[in-house]
Image (cartoon, rainbow, N blue to C red; front, side):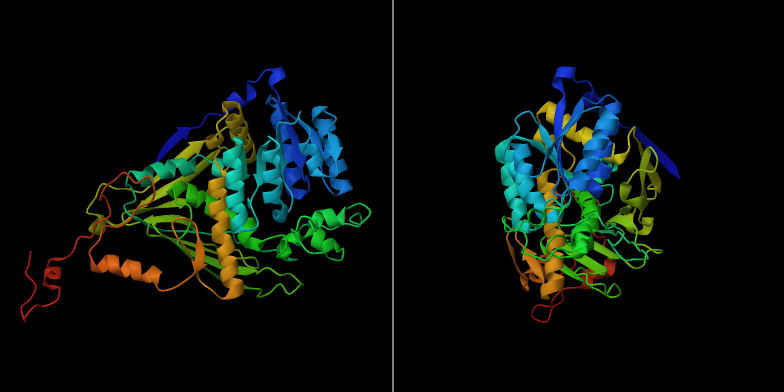
Length: 475
């Protein structure tokens, strides 16, 4: 098996700012993800010389807020200001950017408010909780001129761009499908590994503000530690595995193929084992078909994980097989090109090959460095996971959930308008077949007909309707 390696810059341009050109960041929601992935990564990067300071912390939970402030002081020497309401933080003109690690139902509003206040935004996935919020975030992003990075950290792995180049030049032939997964299993159930503690009380938590009742984000509810600490189990705050895990996997595949909004989506699954008062399924699947003639298949179980699906992009002449959905393995990320047999491709030279990227940082650090680099370049398009990509992933998973819950199939037109499914989706492909049309391709395709034409056997010339009792003329 051959190997092709590519060295990736460390994005050290983000480290070169002078002391008077430091990025000042406010952290919104330093809970489990916001603390472990945001606060700790930023502190580590600062020690490496990145010109960034965490100067403010907002959380409705006093314990999380104080923990973050203490850690920032210990690790960086900065005395971060504290806020109970993130909007007070946004009013501080000395803050350049914010990180958002709150529950999903707050993401869109806080991102929009932050950009309206002139802040750059790093927001955890899923970017929004609902599809229409995605449109609003995109509009806010474009009108503000601010940089926004969505927190699917794996999109900063260089393998997606490497794969995209191969796909666009036709190495796989016509791309027809990609599949991915995120299987998990745990003794206590999906998201119950998020610990709830005695300190979680109405005294320490601004419960109504966390719910977002005044903002219309969630209804009034009686305080419950599991609702607060294990919110991914409940629909008002989360999309379960679809939003928490599927978004990670789908976003990378969209980045590699150049695809964005789907054309048709259906979802399935159910709560087949975890009867512990959760709303969200423990087994789920998503099938999304695209106008470009590509299908996405995502399937996982949260109660069995030893045998998983592979992460694959399939074309008529070959496939790309990704290792661990391209999270980094040490300082490397890799994928394989697996050719189809030469009897089909008529190419005996194509061989299986491994492509490898070597990097200098962990995936969380790389994603932040990409964010900082885009800010310093003043280039909102330079991020690896922009709001358009974030909105496309949300549309796919959100429609799959609606399909599962409402028993419907959904279609999406090329302008992104959602409607209930009908026969038009199948009809168009049948019409294309009847008219012997050319296949459609992913955006960015540069290969003409390469790998996109069938090679009929000679007897196929005998096919076709007879006219006036006469067979079709053999060409």
